[in-house]
Length: 157
Image 1 (cartoon, rainbow, N blue to C red):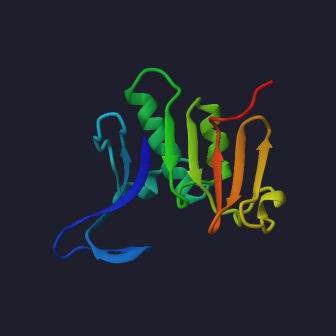
Image 2: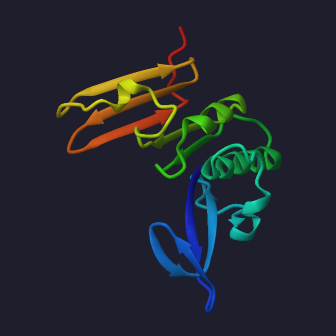
């Protein structure tokens, strides 16, 4: 599964998209990588009814979509791919408890992030960090610094 946002075009309806200003309704979209289908979007008007108001908004979206996915299917072991807008350590831990894996680009400047991964790296330098046997972060500097958070590739001894 991949999670991203989209603006569904309507005449006369405007919403603010942080990346660009467009007309339409703002939806959060889970997409199935096996068949390319878009499934159960969260409409902008549903945002107030999301669970866990103590978590950041993007965490609430990801956890809600994961719960809907588990409610409509049997089993676990799903793998969600996200961009930096939807990747946070808080919901990575929550999803790990639900037996759903997450992998995504993350901004190392986020709070709750290991200080080792916030340091400057030289070109082609690599830094890896494992936290609580639940998630792994990897920073690599090629042309720019890229940091990835994943709960799938955690080493179990």
